[in-house]
Every structure is written in C-alpha cells, then in structure tokens.
Length: 493
Image 1 (cartoon, rainbow, N blue to C red):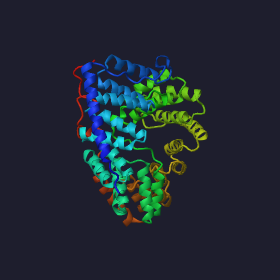
Image 2 (image 1 turned 135 degrees about the horizontal axis):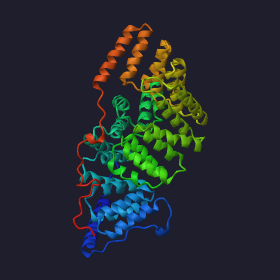
Image 3 (image 1 turned 30 degrees about the vertical axis):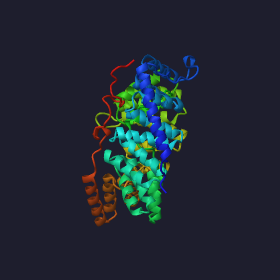
Image 4 (image 1 turned 180 degrees about the vertical axis):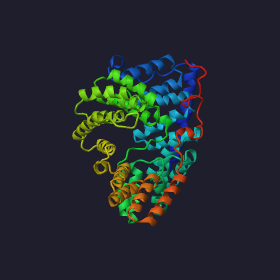
C-alpha cells in the first residue's frame, strides 16, 4: 500500500509551524536573536574552511536579523561537510524568512543526508509551493516518492519537473523507472532511447536501466554497449541553488572541481581567475598548475600554457596528466600558420605522449593524441591502432571507434572501417557524422543501397537535431529579487 503520513504527524507539523511563527515573531519584536552555531575553537582553527566560517559567522553576528546571512552561513557549513550546523543555520534562516525557497530546498537536502526522508519531503513540498517552476525540487520529490513506492505521487512530481524544464534528463529517467515498475518495458525503452541518444546525456543509472531492458528484449549487443556507457560521468544537471555550494568548498580539491565545472560550462575567464589564485596559493600542486595551463590554452594563450607545462613536467615527472597536456599543447603549437607542421615539434610531442602512456597505461587520452600524431604524419594504420587502443581503455566513448574508422577509411581498409564505425554507431546511434562515415565505408565495400539508406538517415537526423541550449533558455524562475532567492530585506540588523 502507498505510504501515508499519519494524521498525528500532520497535527504535529501544524503545531510546529505555529511554534516557529511565534518564535520568529518574538525574535523580531524583542530584537533578540539566537547565536549562530559555531564550532568549538573556531577562532584559532587552521583548517582550510576556518576563514570562510569565521567570515560567515561574523556576518551573522553583525546582522543577526538577516535571514540571508544565516543562509550563507548554512551553505558554508553544508559545502564543508558540517550538515548538523548547516541544518541549525537553515532552520534559523527559515524562522526569519519562512517564504525563502532556497533555504527550504537546502534544508530538504540536509534532511535527506541524515536519512530523514519524511522531513526531506515535507521541506521540499514547501519549496514547490513557493517556487513551482523550480524543476530540481519536483525531481527530488519524484525520486524520494519512488523510493517510498508512492508511484502515483512520483509520476506527478516528475511530470511537473518536465513541465518546468523539458530538458531535465534525470526527471525523464525517473519517468522511465515508473514505466518499468508498471511492467511497460516498451514505453520505458522508447523513452530511454530518446534520452541516451539526446543532446543532454544522462548519468550511469540511465544506461544501466537501458541495458537491462535491452537485455530482456534479447538485444544483447546493444545491451553490452549500454552497459559500457554506464561508466560515464554524472550528468551536469541544472540546479542553481545547489550550485551555490560549489564556490564555498574550501579544500583545494573542492576548488579545483569548481574550476573544472566552470570550464565545462564555458566560463573560461572565471575559471582562469580562480585557477591563477589557486596556483599562487598552492604552487606545489600538480593539479593546480595543469588545470591553469588548460584554462590558458582554452583562451588561446598557448605560450602561457606551455610555460606552465614545461615547469610541470620538470617538477612532476611521474604525472601522466602533465606529460599529456604538455604533448597536446606542443602539438597545437607545431601547426604553423601556413598549414605545415614543425617536425621538431612533433618529435617532442611523441616523446611526451610515450611518457604519458608509460606512466598511466589505462588513460585513453594519450593514446588518442598519439593517433592524432600519426594522422598528421599520414600514418593512417598506425593512427587507427592508437584510436582502437583508446577505445579499449574507454569503451563508452564513441569518438575513439569513430576516429579509428576514419583512419581505416583513409588507409583503404573498408571492412575494418565498417567494424569500427558500426561500434561507434552502436554507442551513439543518432550522430549523423558517424552515419555519414559508415555510409562511405558501406559504399567502399560495394553495398551502395545500404550506403544510400544510411546517408538518408544521416540527413534526417541532422535536420531534427536540436541546437544546444543552456539553462539560460529556460523559463524565468519564480524566486525573489536577487540571485539567492531571498526577497530584499527591508530592515537588516
């Protein structure tokens, strides 16, 4: 039977709301506010998070009636693995600003962290009441209700998430899970095929579910390709309120992760500013140096990138990533403006690619770069072999068999190209560039009719491929006047 909140819980929630409102009224009328939660020994603490916490605590102490200051303190605690103090700060913020959806949203996530699912759902329901257009809130409700086997409620939540943001991939995956629960594999399969081949690929769980359904349908080769793609990284979901945590992670790893997300989102200048600061603070960090070099390269500053990487390979000779990025940047610099290639530069590339492979044989990137090097030299069979080795190391990436197929086509090996390009298309069935290359391999194999059919499919796919659209293309979200979701405070203490 569906799980329901007992009437006593409803009464308790109502009583708690009255008590909270009374307490908030008393705070504001008496001008007496509770102290913020403070870790013992904070004044002398030397952890990486301590300066952030001290600044956030001082802000609350200077403006005790400001809900947004308490919300900021909560985010600092949440971002730096102190969910208990985050919860206290969020509760204090909500008492001062009961209609601020971001505070309720993070309170729901903290409740989930503690395993308090009923409390998490109650808080998230308050979010969707205050901000019905915020898709991530509906998505979380759907996932939690599905965990509770409340299938009907989960379906409504996922539908609302998709109505608010039709590109919410994880909400669409949730709908597929509901269809599986209802033994409707055909509907789930159709939905998942659209998801996994769309412009916004999902996380590993979707590929795992897709592979399971394909296997049940007897489509074993496609199931194997789906399970291979289940090793993919987690998706970049649209969730601005959760993203507020990213710049507040004080550890070097947390800051580097934030810089990499900025790079992935195209905010290269912001990433560069952060990485320059991290490199000054952590000159001994190989990751800080290499990521800064990557950001400089992304902005077209190849010489500046190369200067950093020359130091990095000298300081960190066992770092495969340093040698790979050195080789990649040197490869780019080896291409002269007149279209010719500097042979001395390619020799340098070859040496560092070999070192990158030797220090990390399981990485696909140096092997693929080695394939690019052979391609530049016109050595197509050697290039294909490198791309095939990259595909073994990274079987979920269709780019490697695709590149191998192109190299084999250039080498005149149509059967080998057919095999490689068929593997690429199995991993990404809707990429028209793979279809076009496969059509050429079919034509070279004397299979003209199949080649024509494949070209026609590629044209159809090209005509309906959506243009990439970022979160900025979504409808406006119904929160307050400023970016955090709090309405401007009229009388801050």
